[in-house]
Structure formats: C-alpha cells, structure tokens
Length: 104
Image (cartoon, rainbow, N blue to C red; front, top):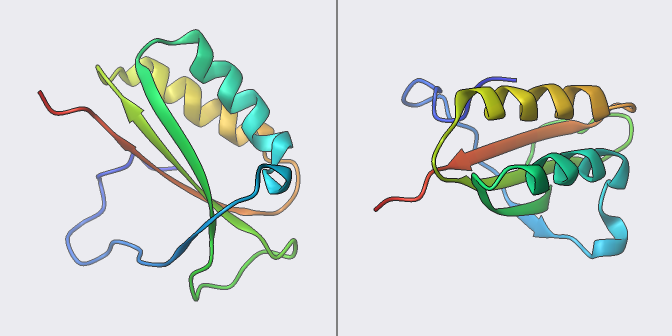
C-alpha cells in the first residue's frame, strides 16, 4: 500500500462510497485495525465504507475504503497500520484508504 497523498496529479482514483450496515463490516479486517487505532491517541476518527466504483471487484465482490483522521501524523504508527492491514487481508478484497491530518 502506498502512503495517501502521494498520487501524482491526475492519477487519483474516483468512485462512490456506500455506507455500510455494521453487520456487513469486514470484521476480519477491521478488528485488528481498530485494535491498533485504540492503542494510539494520534488516530482521532475512523470510518469504513463500501466501495462501489466501476473498477473490477475481487472474487469476493467487495471493496472497502477506510478513512482515518490522524493528528499528529506519525510515520512509524502509519507503517504499523500498513502492516496490520496487510496481515489482516486473508481473502481477496480490494481495499483502499485515506489518511488526513487535522489542520490547526
């Protein structure tokens, strides 16, 4: 996974997001992610959505978008988040995410 905000201009992905019913959350993915988020006060908020864009979906037919608010940004914690997400992906799924820092 690449660090959010590093896409060259004109190469950003666009699509639609769908609000998920909590019963439809990919718990095998978000449980370890949320455990990590709880351990670090830098994460201020997190949202998970279903991705419904035109790109082909994996065999599971599902794609997800995780949005995070992190303040202050910490490269080590961000790397830990990348590793947690990579380890939690057991079945094929398309997973994208974005991270923003709070502006003061």
